[in-house]
Amino acid sequence: MNQQAWYPIINYDLCTGCADCVMECPTEALVMSGCRPVLIQPDACGYCAICEAVCPEEAIALPYRVVVESRS
Image (cartoon, rainbow, N blue to C red):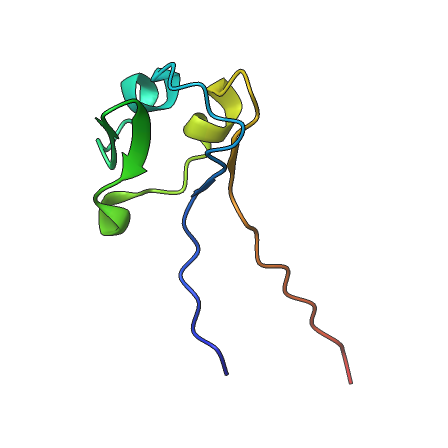
């Protein structure tokens, strides 16, 4: 099974560098590096989705894992 980390994905083609996500991140997992936000502390990310919600350009996406259980 592929063990994939579930961290915010920043689309730099859409990102304008406004830093809203960095300012609102409650765990300080995001920082500005030049004109770009960077997830510098992925283990600190609480997956709260605030960064995704405050981004005016919709440049941040949080992948969600969908688990389906069947009853046998």
